[in-house]
Image (cartoon, rainbow, N blue to C red; front, side, top):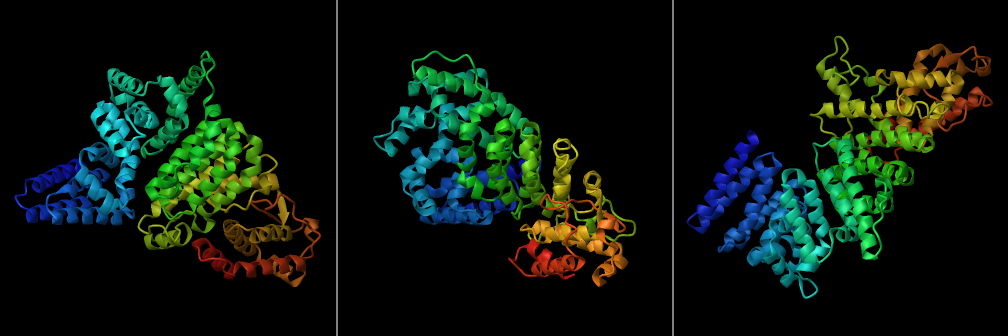
Length: 576
């Protein structure tokens, strides 16, 4: 494969560095090696290059050491990270450094001073979570003793293993499929022997940290399905819950409880800590944020009936993710929203009714717009290319309607996929698991775009809402224009343009004051939405009042509140 060929090339270039006869040749070879690694798209190539460059930090020649520092910093800059995040935030690299650095004081000194700019002791402490699993796997007591010597009198081998045992236990669980039963047993025995504690007690003492490590590692697997990972973790956490209960009983000199707590009950007291605990994932680069979102999705699966207690915090995280510039991040966030709707429908239908409007508002900026319907033929996406439409016209429409300004213009399919994913959330809410729950409330949902992809959802809303006079329709859309959500305003503006174009003669009558009385039912229009705030449109307002309020709302939409892409879109729609 291309990846294997790249790693093979790096191995040969690394040999050139190691075999160089003098410092100048070694430095040149190191720079060539780093340049080749930077040109390769695979993360494994960067990991291998970082490890090799760090090895040169104790080179006898100061020029080579300086070059190694410079090259690591350059790699961090290309990734948009600090050297500390690049090295210590990478599990593979950090694990390698955690085993090597206590045995390589020269590398540790240069790394701490020139790259990380923190004391050596702090570097070692930050490496221990990655180092302990490798040291337990190797049963490497000597390196653990070196850690204890460098960390000070308050640490010894037993203390280190006790404080960071959860990382080793999580590693053994995650990799049990690729290790023999004897290897797992030997590692567990190593832990219990050197800590002097039973496994149940270790699990009870570190159950929160162990849960976080397991969930975080599950979220780090980009290729895994969160639902499948949640099922796997559910079994694992069920076992841990039983071990933790037994460990608490053993520590208190009581008898083990034969009743195993449910996983969702085991998680509930620690859910907020687990979600909020890892600030580096919540505020890191796009990859870290995606890992956090996948972990959060797994936790939504696992928390089950307790989700309403944490739904506001979960939805706040997901809404924030939808505002990020990364299309891949938004894809993960939309998948998580779908899980939230399914879980609330299953475990808390009353709560789903309460937050349904918020779900729709979160989806609106990402839903396909009626003006972009049938643009691109993509199987399963709900978008088909119209006859005679040119590729350039489709691309222009996609840029204007489906792509946010911060998306990659070379990848319109990501926006199409996300539009389809947002529509899937609406379908789940209106047509599938939320169908029976939402009866009687569909008319109160914010306005949905009138497009082919949402035809079935709009039909369900239309059936519940029935006929609506033009004046009442304008009142409803004006409510949308006055909503605090820019997404609701943008959708209401699109529907307003459509409503005004359907029957220009009746609109003229309304403006001239010669329209039929709205309560007479002579002038009616079927619409795909209900009111914005749960109240039926009032017929008590005169036509002049309705028009005046509508014009005022349009003028307010023309005023810029901020410079986001959605705000600018609202201004453009209102001006037209």
